[in-house]
Image 1 (cartoon, rainbow, N blue to C red):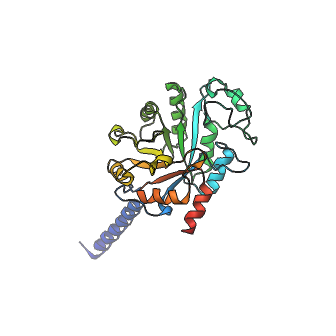
Image 2 (tube, helix red, strand yellow):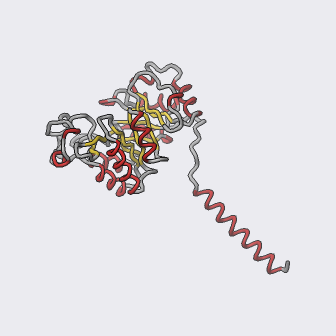
Image 3 (tube, rainbow, N blue to C red):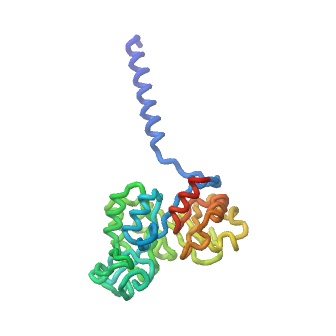
Length: 286
């Protein structure tokens, strides 16, 4: 091999090493579930139904925009089908509490729901609008809770197809208290994140999760009053590849700095809060 051949070989090797380094550094690292978090800055913070405040109603595009502006990592919202089969953003089975109208969502048409206004005059969002919101706000992910209110397989299929067509599989997690719904979504959208929501004051048995469900969302109000060995449970969950998130309750019971600190030290990886601005202020001050 002459001198020039050796020079070209060295240069080619350097170039290949550079490309290898770039490719490796750009790869998404798997989370290290063996460790416990100890900083509020490590948490994924989920804005529960968006950011609700004076003049801002829950589960509206306004509440979600404020969550994005406040730099929430995730927004949580609630979906259920109308009689027309469209997924609408409504927490309760009826529209009575949060809008100026009356009726059961599952018995109302899309036209009726489009005509509703919330307490402060906002329209009720539906699936296409939520998808467009996420396209416009690329820094925030979605935790879409599929309420156990009479979904048909065809309606779940239509929703999954919309999310896949929008290329949002990596940014949306399906959450539900219904294992049937989660397992159905696992078949319809393989690879998307599945999050089980627990409303019981007992910790869900880890052995029942199987390999498809990625996260257990447990309740604030029970986490430290009743759960003996909570940190041990979280560590065991991590060993099985299951993340543990603590979920806020209505009116934010336990949603305060002393509880946040205990949750973080116990090892949760995500906090679902009704008080996103307060959490950010507290975290920035510690």
